[in-house]
Image (cartoon, rainbow, N blue to C red; front, side, top):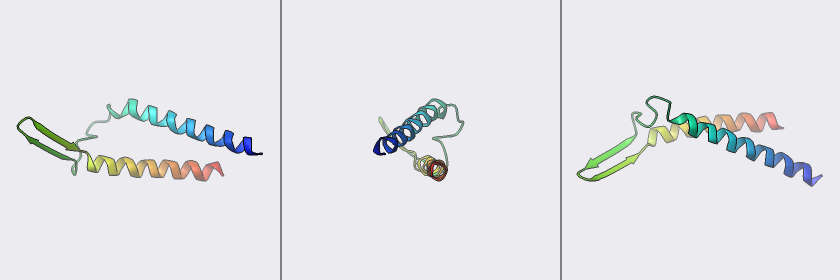
Length: 75
């Protein structure tokens, strides 16, 4: 039954890419995302450095929760 296992993984990967694509479409419409307290912005002359630390942590937590639910329901 190895083909069934491959099929499940391909479906899971496809759903992940679908969700990730929708996330990229909608992420620009979320107000304040990318400008949270904890996001690092350094501007000096023509140099701009931006590292969205708080946004990255928030998205990581959300993605961890979603993937946890997906894997628990997949069993």
